[in-house]
Image 1 (cartoon, one colour):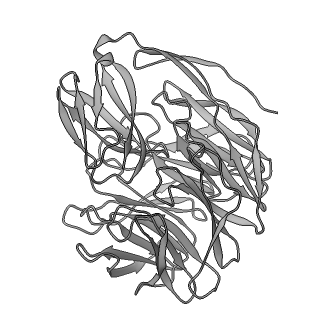
Image 2: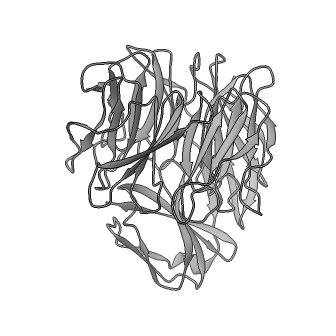
Length: 447
């Protein structure tokens, strides 16, 4: 049964009546049993699409969003290079052109289908890389170029992409802290350098590898979380500009645990345990009602529900339940993104031969009485390399948020200033300005 909660609150001085709600679950049948879903623009048309990977399969499926905001149910199949079973898969720019590429690894080859400017893909390009069981993408040496973290049964491979040599990698290797694990790449101490967070479910430990200024990573810091972990996500959930760690635990004592970085050395030392609905598994974080605050979405293994946690003064104590097929969800089964081009983040769950779509229909009504915000002008829009802001009060804090709800850029602007967008991928973005203790939201397109 769906539980609707009406929340009234004041956010940075903006009065808002906000109700988070989703339409009834829409399902698309899948031929195989899926194990993962990613939401991203896969044909360079500034519309987010859906990619599904499968258990024991030699292909992935792409469901493209149409220009009218509908989703094509006739999926495009992308097969592995040699028709063998896919053991690892991810999406990201790995040839320095700003477009997301399809990385696929099998027991015999690791490589990518590179996206072209017209939205199509190249022939499969084989890389001189190991054959991992997981691929994580991000800048691992602070050169603004994506690298790869590849993990096998007992090794971690750091594949550094050469500057000026797209899709050419230098590889180093070290022992993996645990045979079973989940890897994420994110800056957790706000020093502008990405760090690595590795979760070991069986040992109930988090290993945080901080990237050093001179290159490489410190010896990992261990954090004990006392219970098995089903999934992790690294995002800012309390609006302090620092990435937090959110983990899920299923079983009889199901919970969501939130780890905020310490103010001394920005390492995850302790957690806040939030009681959750049964068997909390796959998880994501996004702003579902465009109020500038992130919510937590979780799928529940075996209970056919997705819950959304909202915060009150940064305390996540209440959740709403929405019907959704979640028979066998695991890490990576849930993702979020705007898949009908209405400016709201939707929830997508791939599970048990079914693609589930919860279309967001949350309402936010804001009364903004700040005259200083009414004259703000953003141009050009769409923008390519730079976005200019006019009539902005001096020393205004800003943050840019992508379609997944992730803060991709923030800082302080003067009265009129140019924001560099060159490191952002193409797509739709929100930009928030904090003016007189009130958050003002604008939208722009990076082309």
